[in-house]
Length: 119
Image (tube, rainbow, N blue to C red; front, side):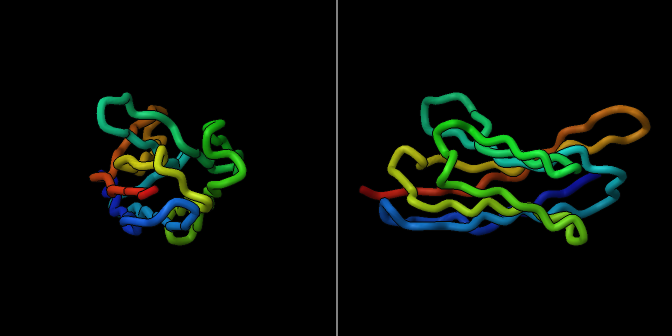
């Protein structure tokens, strides 16, 4: 079982920055990818950014050029550096990890961390 612990959310003014962290622990076999999703009130959960085990990056169009995802493989930790934050970035941000175990993918989610951007 993989456990994810997130940190780094909070309240920031528009134009400010925050850095989210997500550390994976437990019985980890092989991680396919680590990423971040977010869900704003009344909206569906959406992909923010993802990084695969080979380093391939994937960003939502709305955050390209402002957010940067990175990963520390030795620590099984993924980071999301968020710059030039906008009020529309306000959401609960969830860490997502997919593990490959015995030939099958398993997805795990963090508990979520609130990011609030004031105008």
